[in-house]
Image (spheres, rainbow, N blue to C red):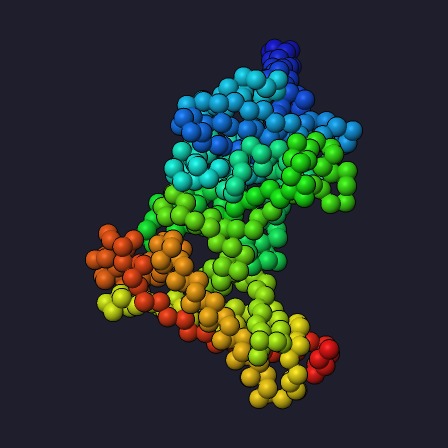
Length: 397
């Protein structure tokens, strides 16, 4: 009996060992995996989709810097999924989307609607919810992903770093990830705004070098990726773009704590610059009177001053703050007019505030909010204070 128990125990141990080893039979070697870091999706004139998959090379992950870190595969299909499947058939590795950083779409697709892209991304379990979606401005998504920036970071990785890290240090970018974009597309209380990426060429005659090593063999690459605009949407369709100055005002209106830069010119001659150190923003609605108010509080410090004024007195600081406030108020007035009349889309989320502040009234107007928003009387209530004039104090040069 004891012998039988011993044999049984040995058999069970052997069985467990074999089952553990069997799991390795289905493993995929690293050099058989194609980790897609960026997808470019271009809507063509015939209604088909051209999909570009920027894929990391396994050798780059192992520290082999003798070759480019990425390669791109491209295919065309009647749907995004069909085009991606054709890419998968072309690849010598199994393509994985778990490391996808960004999806770039061209303007034609943004004009047609983002829904096919969002549908494709949401239905793939491997796609993470924190990926970024960008619009390729004045170029194709394919060309954006084929610009080689450095030998260490693929273009998709560069865009991911740019949008996820630098946005905390600049007021001209936004960071809305996949799930946030989906939520904003599917609600009429706020419309989504996305970063728009473009390609800047120092020499138009050298465009062909954008995707090879020549582009990174100089201190200043000929082809550079730049995010200088924000793409504004109504539901899932693009309506236009915001420039850098307008992007700053957009973020300020939403109360995002970023590095805002203020400038004004006094008496048409003296320039003054300030940096905002604190921001508070609150939107109040009064739909019964067709009104809304943007209440914005700014605290700033002087970073450059050419105006001959004694900044050691509080009265003069108030004068300087008033000059800056007048400029910001004018900029906001022009910006709101542009958003309402040219874009006609509620990117401020005024509808969302009305939902909470005037729920009954909102339920009556939400069905035609798109028609009501351009006619809404939006007032700016700005309060700007200066709390610092820098290390040199009263000196003007």
